[in-house]
Amino acid sequence: MSYFEQIDKSHVPTHIAIVMDGNGRWAKAQGKDRIFGHLEGVRSVKAIVKAAAKADVKYLTLYTFSTENFNRPAAEVSALMGMFIDSINKETDELIENGVRGLIIGDMNRLGADVIAKAREFEQRTADGKKLTLVLAFSYSSRWEITNAARLISQDVVAGRIKEEDINEQLFSSYLTTKDIPDPDLLIRTGGEIRISNYLLWQAAYAELYFTDTAWPDFKDEAFYEAIVNFQSRERRFGKTSEQVKADK
Image (tube, rainbow, N blue to C red; front, side, top):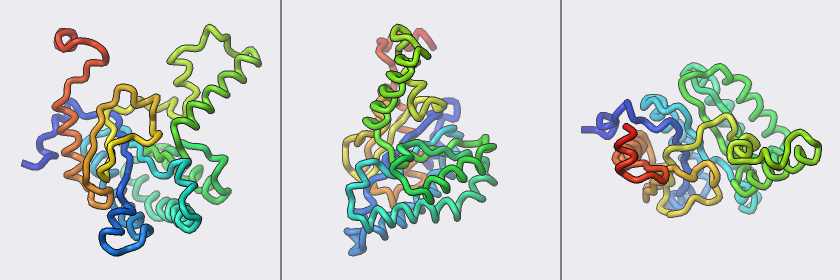
């Protein structure tokens, strides 16, 4: 029986976030340069977007480019920016046909005008998608996002738009780039590393974590479905006891 056939459609995670890791190491193992790995990784993006829609996942967030990635060699950063633009040019029409809405989260101020324009075009053209929301975390890091939210809240307190006593978890969340997105239920990291690398730290407070040695270029639909099946085997307690969780059902 395939992993897809094992999925309980009544218990599919609403939001899955992925750290797409392993492109460079995968390429190196094959005697290729890192860019080759990133190009192959784009194939996995296409496969997983389709797999998420097929499994009725409503939100899929992909860690596409972190703020720390700007520290990589200039040639690699330039190539990744070009791949971002090229991928949007090639894939947007098909995403629209398949009912996918696209969102970009991250520090747009660090991106070139051409990348920003393409990101906004992508969001506008796919705005009517209802099947799946594809969130691309691009020029993103949680520490930047949380610091930025604190700065914006401080500005609004000083301006009298909110009061200090109004600040709570809900208000703070409304200042994050993910304010219109539910928190992830499942966070997957490919590539063998066991960390979440400054990704959705606030939002993933109660996400189930799933780590796999499979490098991103080899991570396709059945690997994705295996992660969902694993998620469905877990008991999510959110601070409660097992007995409380069972009583609530």
